[in-house]
Image 1 (tube, rainbow, N blue to C red):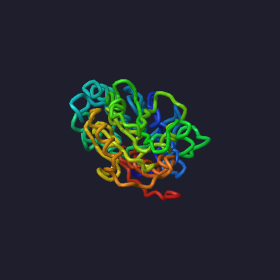
Image 2: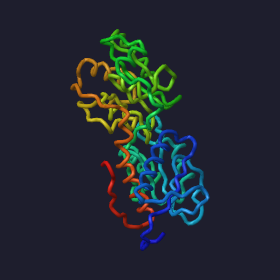
Image 3: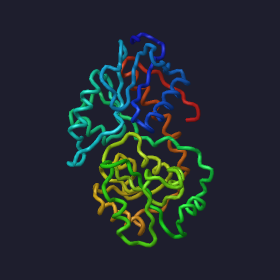
Image 4: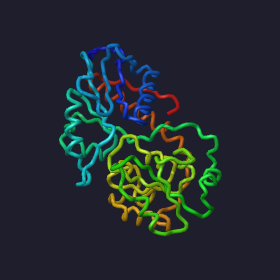
Amino acid sequence: MTALSHEPPRVRLDCVAAVDGLASVLERAAAALADARQIRLARPGEPADVVHTVGEAGPGRAAGRARRVHTVDRVLLDRRGLAAAAGWVHRQRRFTRGAETWLVHGRTAARVLVASGVVDGARLHELPVVAPPPGRAAADRDRSSVRARLGIAPGVALVVGCERGPGLSVPGWADSIRALHRTDVRVIHHGTGGPVTFEELLVAADLFVAAGLGLTACNPGAAAVAAGIPLIAATSDSAAELLRFGRTGLVVPPHPAAIAAAVQAVLDGALPRRDRRPPASAADAQLPALARGLLGAYHRALGTPRAPVAWSGS
């Protein structure tokens, strides 16, 4: 495709198997662009103008003359705080050679990428932190019914968080809240099984804890913010940049004691009361902005001007 071409670019989305929710969100955004005739989706094996890799895609996967756009799905941090882990930096440099344009979700992740020398700022294109796509449909999302199934008595505050796996969350954050010995608090961390889905937990939750030790592109904290749930976010979690400090949540150091103190403060009235919104709307609300960002990145990689897009329902 040349700068004089008026044909929409042919794009192939190439996601590694480990990219869970983000792959689904990006596929939906790419499909919206294809429906609007802003891009054409190339099937595997077909020639493409742009190959969009997501996650730690192996070197050489963008074959032929296609331009390569790469999405960073997560930035793993080391113990120094907001700095990329050396091993992660090495893998990114190895796997992403030849990518003309880098996509990163969130301001914090963008700063860490540039500071660590993974990519220069001129090649970086920032996208919003997104929420995971909705899971399987819940038969009953009534708040009182979900809380009853969880055995939560009236007057008890439900604190919800997500466990990303060993070493990927602040260790002991849930136990530090339980150690407050408050009879009016129940803590549930999603990811360890349970009788309800994540969407149902958001319906029932009074407070959400984002305690990740990595800057993730597809962050459950984004769904909590969209649902109007107060948020406690560690500085090492990308959800920290989604809240308004002192109004929609608090940002704390990535230590269990700091998280517990913030939870106690919120439960004791440190934040103003807000109206809740349906959590299932989070992914749909983000889709137009994400699609526009992707389209801009594809045209940027090709060096072509981008025509304005009229989005239905936006």
